[in-house]
Length: 328
Image 1 (tube, rainbow, N blue to C red):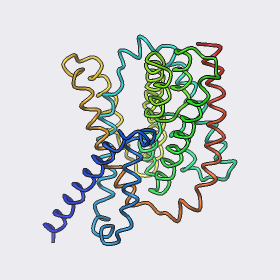
Image 2 (image 1 turned 30 degrees about the horizontal axis):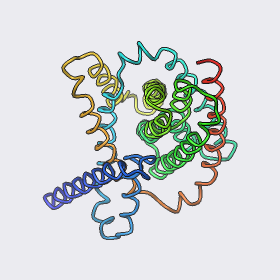
Image 3 (image 1 turned 120 degrees about the vertical axis):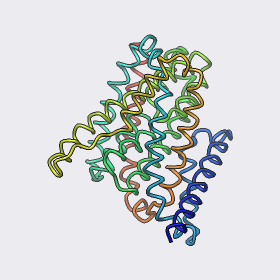
Protein backbone atom coordinates (compact mmCIF):
# COMPACT_ATOMS: atom_id res chain seq x y z
CA UNK A 1 0.00 0.00 0.00
CA UNK A 2 2.86 2.36 0.86
CA UNK A 3 4.50 1.63 -2.48
CA UNK A 4 1.24 2.39 -4.28
CA UNK A 5 1.01 5.72 -2.45
CA UNK A 6 4.61 6.48 -3.37
CA UNK A 7 3.94 5.73 -7.03
CA UNK A 8 0.95 8.07 -7.09
CA UNK A 9 2.94 10.79 -5.36
CA UNK A 10 5.68 10.74 -8.00
CA UNK A 11 3.10 10.52 -10.77
CA UNK A 12 1.36 13.61 -9.36
CA UNK A 13 4.71 15.37 -8.97
CA UNK A 14 5.59 14.70 -12.62
CA UNK A 15 2.14 15.90 -13.70
CA UNK A 16 2.56 19.19 -11.82
CA UNK A 17 6.02 19.61 -13.36
CA UNK A 18 4.61 19.05 -16.87
CA UNK A 19 1.84 21.58 -16.24
CA UNK A 20 4.37 24.14 -15.01
CA UNK A 21 6.56 23.63 -18.08
CA UNK A 22 3.57 23.93 -20.43
CA UNK A 23 2.53 27.13 -18.64
CA UNK A 24 6.10 28.45 -18.94
CA UNK A 25 6.01 27.99 -22.71
CA UNK A 26 2.50 29.41 -23.07
CA UNK A 27 3.62 32.52 -21.18
CA UNK A 28 5.79 33.38 -24.21
CA UNK A 29 2.77 33.47 -26.53
CA UNK A 30 2.00 37.11 -27.35
CA UNK A 31 -1.60 37.30 -26.10
CA UNK A 32 -0.80 35.28 -22.94
CA UNK A 33 2.28 37.22 -21.81
CA UNK A 34 0.23 39.54 -19.64
CA UNK A 35 -1.06 36.63 -17.56
CA UNK A 36 2.35 35.10 -16.86
CA UNK A 37 3.63 31.64 -16.02
CA UNK A 38 2.04 31.29 -12.58
CA UNK A 39 -1.49 32.32 -13.49
CA UNK A 40 -1.48 30.07 -16.56
CA UNK A 41 -0.36 27.12 -14.40
CA UNK A 42 -3.18 27.90 -11.97
CA UNK A 43 -5.76 27.93 -14.78
CA UNK A 44 -4.50 24.63 -16.23
CA UNK A 45 -4.75 23.06 -12.78
CA UNK A 46 -8.31 24.34 -12.46
CA UNK A 47 -9.21 22.91 -15.87
CA UNK A 48 -7.91 19.48 -14.85
CA UNK A 49 -10.60 19.35 -12.19
CA UNK A 50 -13.00 18.36 -14.97
CA UNK A 51 -11.47 14.87 -14.73
CA UNK A 52 -13.08 13.37 -11.63
CA UNK A 53 -10.79 10.32 -11.64
CA UNK A 54 -7.64 12.44 -11.91
CA UNK A 55 -8.81 14.69 -9.10
CA UNK A 56 -9.52 11.69 -6.88
CA UNK A 57 -6.16 10.02 -7.57
CA UNK A 58 -4.09 13.14 -6.90
CA UNK A 59 -5.99 14.78 -4.02
CA UNK A 60 -3.85 13.22 -1.24
CA UNK A 61 -0.58 14.52 -2.65
CA UNK A 62 -1.73 17.91 -3.94
CA UNK A 63 -1.55 19.74 -0.55
CA UNK A 64 2.05 18.58 0.04
CA UNK A 65 3.20 19.67 -3.43
CA UNK A 66 1.41 23.01 -3.17
CA UNK A 67 2.95 23.78 0.22
CA UNK A 68 6.52 22.52 -0.17
CA UNK A 69 7.18 23.63 -3.74
CA UNK A 70 5.71 27.03 -2.98
CA UNK A 71 8.30 27.49 -0.24
CA UNK A 72 11.14 26.16 -2.40
CA UNK A 73 10.10 28.52 -5.19
CA UNK A 74 10.00 31.55 -2.93
CA UNK A 75 13.44 30.71 -1.51
CA UNK A 76 14.99 30.55 -5.00
CA UNK A 77 13.07 33.65 -6.08
CA UNK A 78 15.46 35.56 -3.83
CA UNK A 79 18.00 35.33 -6.67
CA UNK A 80 15.80 37.72 -8.67
CA UNK A 81 16.57 40.56 -6.29
CA UNK A 82 19.83 42.26 -7.21
CA UNK A 83 20.30 43.92 -3.83
CA UNK A 84 23.57 45.57 -4.81
CA UNK A 85 21.95 47.27 -7.82
CA UNK A 86 18.81 48.20 -5.90
CA UNK A 87 20.74 49.80 -3.06
CA UNK A 88 22.90 51.85 -5.47
CA UNK A 89 20.50 52.78 -8.28
CA UNK A 90 17.16 52.38 -6.58
CA UNK A 91 17.34 54.55 -3.46
CA UNK A 92 14.40 56.71 -4.55
CA UNK A 93 12.44 53.74 -5.89
CA UNK A 94 12.93 51.86 -2.60
CA UNK A 95 11.36 54.74 -0.69
CA UNK A 96 8.57 54.92 -3.25
CA UNK A 97 8.06 51.15 -3.04
CA UNK A 98 7.75 51.26 0.73
CA UNK A 99 5.16 54.04 0.53
CA UNK A 100 3.23 52.33 -2.29
CA UNK A 101 3.14 48.96 -0.54
CA UNK A 102 2.05 50.44 2.78
CA UNK A 103 -0.55 52.69 1.13
CA UNK A 104 -1.92 49.95 -1.12
CA UNK A 105 -2.15 47.25 1.54
CA UNK A 106 -3.98 49.55 3.96
CA UNK A 107 -6.25 51.03 1.27
CA UNK A 108 -7.18 47.69 -0.31
CA UNK A 109 -7.75 46.04 3.05
CA UNK A 110 -10.03 48.86 4.23
CA UNK A 111 -11.99 48.82 0.97
CA UNK A 112 -12.32 45.03 1.12
CA UNK A 113 -13.72 45.24 4.63
CA UNK A 114 -16.14 47.99 3.53
CA UNK A 115 -17.27 45.62 0.76
CA UNK A 116 -17.70 42.94 3.46
CA UNK A 117 -14.85 40.70 2.31
CA UNK A 118 -13.60 38.43 5.11
CA UNK A 119 -10.33 39.36 6.83
CA UNK A 120 -8.15 36.58 5.42
CA UNK A 121 -9.17 37.16 1.79
CA UNK A 122 -8.88 40.92 2.29
CA UNK A 123 -5.30 40.59 3.54
CA UNK A 124 -4.27 38.21 0.74
CA UNK A 125 -5.75 40.49 -1.92
CA UNK A 126 -4.16 43.55 -0.33
CA UNK A 127 -0.70 41.98 -0.39
CA UNK A 128 -1.17 40.76 -3.96
CA UNK A 129 -2.17 44.22 -5.18
CA UNK A 130 0.38 46.00 -3.03
CA UNK A 131 3.54 43.92 -3.46
CA UNK A 132 4.09 41.61 -6.43
CA UNK A 133 0.95 39.76 -7.45
CA UNK A 134 0.61 35.99 -7.29
CA UNK A 135 3.98 35.34 -5.63
CA UNK A 136 3.08 37.73 -2.80
CA UNK A 137 -0.33 36.13 -2.34
CA UNK A 138 1.24 32.69 -2.11
CA UNK A 139 3.99 33.83 0.23
CA UNK A 140 1.54 35.51 2.59
CA UNK A 141 -0.98 32.65 2.36
CA UNK A 142 1.73 30.25 3.48
CA UNK A 143 2.37 32.41 6.54
CA UNK A 144 -1.33 32.69 7.33
CA UNK A 145 -2.08 29.06 6.46
CA UNK A 146 -4.92 30.50 4.43
CA UNK A 147 -7.80 28.56 2.94
CA UNK A 148 -7.14 27.32 -0.58
CA UNK A 149 -10.18 29.06 -2.06
CA UNK A 150 -9.05 32.38 -0.58
CA UNK A 151 -5.57 32.03 -2.07
CA UNK A 152 -6.91 31.11 -5.51
CA UNK A 153 -9.47 33.90 -5.50
CA UNK A 154 -6.86 36.50 -4.49
CA UNK A 155 -4.48 35.30 -7.23
CA UNK A 156 -7.25 35.40 -9.83
CA UNK A 157 -8.35 38.91 -8.88
CA UNK A 158 -4.80 40.28 -8.91
CA UNK A 159 -4.04 38.64 -12.26
CA UNK A 160 -7.18 39.97 -13.95
CA UNK A 161 -6.77 43.47 -12.56
CA UNK A 162 -3.08 43.58 -13.43
CA UNK A 163 -3.89 42.67 -17.03
CA UNK A 164 -6.67 45.26 -17.26
CA UNK A 165 -4.51 48.06 -15.88
CA UNK A 166 -1.55 47.09 -18.06
CA UNK A 167 -3.74 47.59 -21.13
CA UNK A 168 -5.10 50.86 -19.71
CA UNK A 169 -1.63 52.29 -19.01
CA UNK A 170 -0.24 51.29 -22.40
CA UNK A 171 -3.28 52.85 -24.10
CA UNK A 172 -2.96 56.07 -22.08
CA UNK A 173 0.81 56.39 -22.62
CA UNK A 174 0.67 58.91 -25.53
CA UNK A 175 -1.57 61.21 -23.48
CA UNK A 176 0.25 61.14 -20.13
CA UNK A 177 3.01 63.60 -20.95
CA UNK A 178 5.68 61.53 -19.17
CA UNK A 179 9.33 61.07 -20.11
CA UNK A 180 10.60 57.52 -20.64
CA UNK A 181 12.06 57.50 -17.12
CA UNK A 182 8.86 58.86 -15.57
CA UNK A 183 6.74 56.37 -17.49
CA UNK A 184 8.92 53.53 -16.18
CA UNK A 185 8.44 54.77 -12.61
CA UNK A 186 4.68 55.03 -13.23
CA UNK A 187 4.26 51.49 -14.60
CA UNK A 188 6.70 49.79 -12.23
CA UNK A 189 5.13 51.32 -9.14
CA UNK A 190 1.47 50.95 -10.12
CA UNK A 191 1.17 47.50 -11.72
CA UNK A 192 0.81 44.29 -9.73
CA UNK A 193 2.93 41.57 -11.41
CA UNK A 194 6.50 41.76 -12.71
CA UNK A 195 5.13 40.52 -16.06
CA UNK A 196 2.70 43.46 -16.15
CA UNK A 197 5.45 45.99 -15.38
CA UNK A 198 7.66 44.49 -18.11
CA UNK A 199 4.84 44.54 -20.67
CA UNK A 200 3.78 48.12 -19.94
CA UNK A 201 7.31 49.46 -19.40
CA UNK A 202 8.49 47.88 -22.63
CA UNK A 203 5.95 49.96 -24.54
CA UNK A 204 7.95 53.05 -23.55
CA UNK A 205 11.33 51.86 -24.82
CA UNK A 206 14.47 50.52 -23.13
CA UNK A 207 14.86 53.33 -20.58
CA UNK A 208 11.23 52.96 -19.49
CA UNK A 209 11.58 49.17 -19.32
CA UNK A 210 14.74 49.26 -17.19
CA UNK A 211 13.19 51.82 -14.85
CA UNK A 212 9.93 49.87 -14.59
CA UNK A 213 11.81 46.70 -13.63
CA UNK A 214 13.85 48.58 -11.02
CA UNK A 215 10.70 50.12 -9.52
CA UNK A 216 8.90 46.78 -9.55
CA UNK A 217 11.77 44.87 -7.95
CA UNK A 218 11.86 47.52 -5.23
CA UNK A 219 8.28 46.51 -4.44
CA UNK A 220 9.21 42.82 -4.55
CA UNK A 221 11.81 43.54 -1.87
CA UNK A 222 8.98 44.73 0.37
CA UNK A 223 7.75 41.11 0.49
CA UNK A 224 10.50 40.55 3.06
CA UNK A 225 9.21 43.42 5.19
CA UNK A 226 5.56 42.36 5.02
CA UNK A 227 6.39 38.70 5.60
CA UNK A 228 8.56 39.73 8.54
CA UNK A 229 5.67 41.59 10.14
CA UNK A 230 3.41 38.57 9.63
CA UNK A 231 6.10 36.32 11.10
CA UNK A 232 6.21 38.38 14.30
CA UNK A 233 2.41 38.33 14.58
CA UNK A 234 2.26 34.59 13.91
CA UNK A 235 5.10 33.78 16.28
CA UNK A 236 3.34 35.58 19.10
CA UNK A 237 -0.01 33.91 18.43
CA UNK A 238 1.55 30.44 18.05
CA UNK A 239 3.61 30.90 21.18
CA UNK A 240 0.46 31.72 23.12
CA UNK A 241 -1.35 28.68 21.69
CA UNK A 242 1.40 26.04 21.86
CA UNK A 243 4.31 27.53 23.79
CA UNK A 244 6.49 27.05 20.67
CA UNK A 245 7.83 29.56 18.19
CA UNK A 246 7.89 28.09 14.64
CA UNK A 247 10.52 29.59 12.33
CA UNK A 248 9.58 30.72 8.79
CA UNK A 249 12.61 29.12 7.13
CA UNK A 250 11.49 29.93 3.60
CA UNK A 251 11.59 33.70 4.29
CA UNK A 252 15.05 33.32 5.82
CA UNK A 253 16.02 31.34 2.71
CA UNK A 254 14.62 34.08 0.46
CA UNK A 255 16.76 36.71 2.18
CA UNK A 256 19.85 34.47 2.12
CA UNK A 257 19.48 33.74 -1.62
CA UNK A 258 19.07 37.48 -2.30
CA UNK A 259 22.34 38.18 -0.50
CA UNK A 260 24.20 35.31 -2.19
CA UNK A 261 22.92 36.24 -5.65
CA UNK A 262 23.90 39.87 -5.16
CA UNK A 263 27.32 39.64 -3.51
CA UNK A 264 28.85 36.22 -4.32
CA UNK A 265 30.46 36.74 -7.71
CA UNK A 266 30.51 33.07 -8.68
CA UNK A 267 26.72 32.88 -8.27
CA UNK A 268 25.79 36.07 -10.13
CA UNK A 269 25.90 34.49 -13.62
CA UNK A 270 23.79 31.58 -12.32
CA UNK A 271 21.06 33.79 -10.82
CA UNK A 272 18.80 33.75 -13.94
CA UNK A 273 18.87 29.93 -13.94
CA UNK A 274 17.92 29.77 -10.26
CA UNK A 275 15.06 32.18 -10.98
CA UNK A 276 13.87 29.92 -13.82
CA UNK A 277 13.83 26.96 -11.43
CA UNK A 278 12.01 29.11 -8.87
CA UNK A 279 9.21 29.85 -11.33
CA UNK A 280 8.99 26.18 -12.31
CA UNK A 281 8.53 25.25 -8.63
CA UNK A 282 6.03 28.07 -8.11
CA UNK A 283 4.19 26.94 -11.25
CA UNK A 284 3.95 23.42 -9.81
CA UNK A 285 2.54 24.85 -6.59
CA UNK A 286 0.03 26.97 -8.50
CA UNK A 287 -1.07 24.00 -10.62
CA UNK A 288 -1.61 21.98 -7.45
CA UNK A 289 -3.54 24.88 -5.96
CA UNK A 290 -5.73 25.05 -9.05
CA UNK A 291 -6.60 21.37 -8.74
CA UNK A 292 -7.90 21.89 -5.21
CA UNK A 293 -9.98 25.05 -5.69
CA UNK A 294 -13.65 25.23 -4.71
CA UNK A 295 -15.43 26.92 -7.63
CA UNK A 296 -18.67 27.44 -5.71
CA UNK A 297 -16.93 29.59 -3.11
CA UNK A 298 -15.17 31.68 -5.78
CA UNK A 299 -18.42 32.29 -7.65
CA UNK A 300 -20.19 33.49 -4.51
CA UNK A 301 -17.46 35.80 -3.21
CA UNK A 302 -15.58 37.00 -6.28
CA UNK A 303 -17.50 40.16 -7.16
CA UNK A 304 -17.03 41.93 -3.83
CA UNK A 305 -13.27 41.44 -3.60
CA UNK A 306 -12.84 42.29 -7.29
CA UNK A 307 -14.77 45.55 -6.84
CA UNK A 308 -12.70 46.58 -3.81
CA UNK A 309 -9.38 45.78 -5.51
CA UNK A 310 -10.45 47.51 -8.74
CA UNK A 311 -11.22 50.71 -6.85
CA UNK A 312 -7.91 50.62 -4.96
CA UNK A 313 -6.03 49.98 -8.22
CA UNK A 314 -7.65 53.02 -9.85
CA UNK A 315 -6.57 55.17 -6.90
CA UNK A 316 -3.04 53.71 -6.99
CA UNK A 317 -2.71 54.44 -10.71
CA UNK A 318 -3.69 58.06 -10.12
CA UNK A 319 -1.32 58.50 -7.19
CA UNK A 320 1.61 56.87 -9.02
CA UNK A 321 1.02 59.09 -12.05
CA UNK A 322 1.20 62.22 -9.90
CA UNK A 323 4.34 60.96 -8.14
CA UNK A 324 6.07 60.10 -11.43
CA UNK A 325 5.06 63.42 -13.00
CA UNK A 326 5.90 65.83 -10.20
CA UNK A 327 8.45 64.10 -7.94
CA UNK A 328 10.68 61.94 -10.19
